[in-house]
Figure 1 (tube, rainbow, N blue to C red):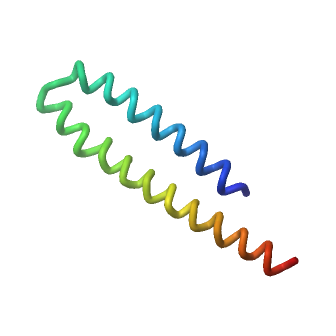
Figure 2: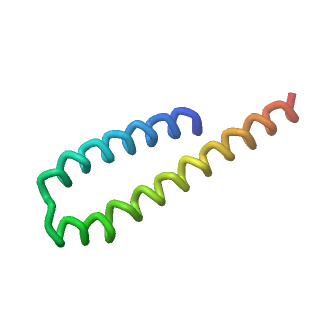
Length: 70
């Protein structure tokens, strides 16, 4: 398991999703689009941000374990 690589990949996916959603949202300007954003997009972005934070912490913990085991 490589938390740094996973974090980089998740970060890139989040950027792509945000970009694509921005393009879609520019065309989908009704109440259903807003509802979809509030119901699905925003929570997903929140969870992805939490996952990125957790991966960063895990990376630090694993680095400490490696140092302690040397």
